[in-house]
Image (cartoon, rainbow, N blue to C red; front, side, top):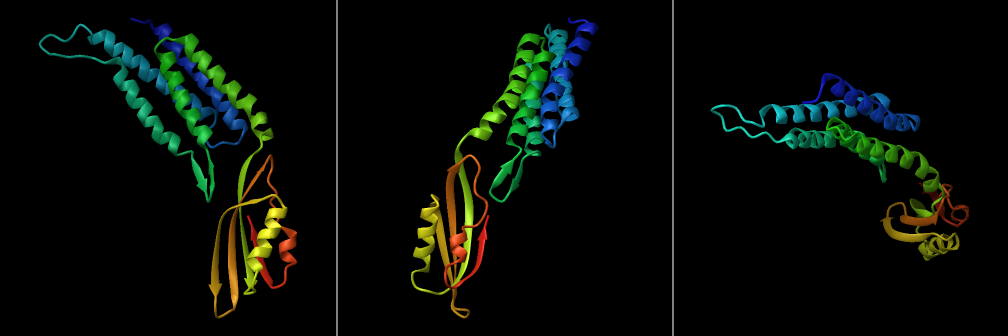
Length: 225
């Protein structure tokens, strides 16, 4: 059986490692910060310690009762429960999803806490260190990567022949690719609404509307987002 001091050491170590990961998230303004990660890791370590304690206590069985103790069962339930907590930090706004990295960190910190609680200090510390280094070191690299950005262009125009082709020409000239397009016609107002889902591969997308579109005859409104 592990001693009381050993249990305290595991709990403190799990708290420090979880708090280290949480500090990085806190610095980036994420909803789950130092306290959240510290408590997650601490609670996970305690769950693992209890699982190990119950295994050692009842592995010989209980007289008159056919009792089998699985030390991994409680820990498995902790992993399942953490999934719900991780889902709570994922935020979706239109076509943008934020919080996936934070949710992954929540899950990893739970695993770190369980590992420290089981007494595998080196592995738990290594995973926590790799997590912090990855979060801090890969962020600048991600900012320099060229990636696909998607933007939506909506044009309201008078119903004029060839208007869609003229807009398409401007889009091509700016190096944008049309992923999808749509058209709706208002017969009473004699105007059409053209929508284009555009793709652009760059480090930072151009958020301003295409200036040439405003200059076309018959244009009434342009939205670019």
